[in-house]
Amino acid sequence: MFLSIWAVKGRFGDFYILGQRIGGGGQGQVYSCKQASSGKDFAVKIIDTNVEAGSQLMARWSSELDTLIRLEQDIGARCPYITQTYCIFQELSHNFIVMEVMAGRTLTDLLHTKHT
Image (tube, rainbow, N blue to C red; front, side, top):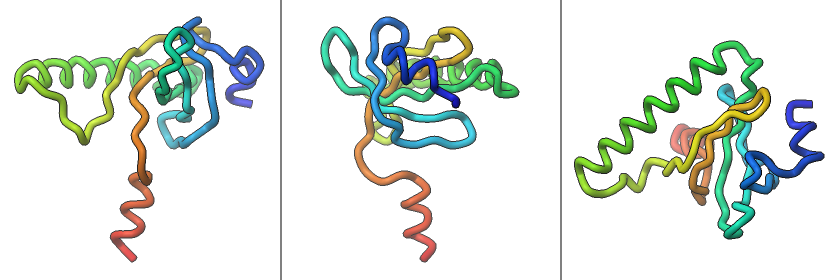
């Protein structure tokens, strides 16, 4: 099973408590999580580094994060339509992207609704 170690351990990075699966796709699985120290809710995308191109995907995410940070600095605000990313790190054979939780429907749901 993909997350068997996390289901038992329940924590990752010594900072977050893993919650329920809330989505997933070609890049990885998305779970709710809670910051252990503050209790604040986040989402975490977990990418197995054993998956082909996992390290290339993380390099792309890191580059995109740098671009978003520069863009926010240039305009002095963040775009409300782009999920805020808080940290990216690797632990064991998994990459973690911790981001804000976005309420609402998935992009797939929205596209399906628009085309029916």
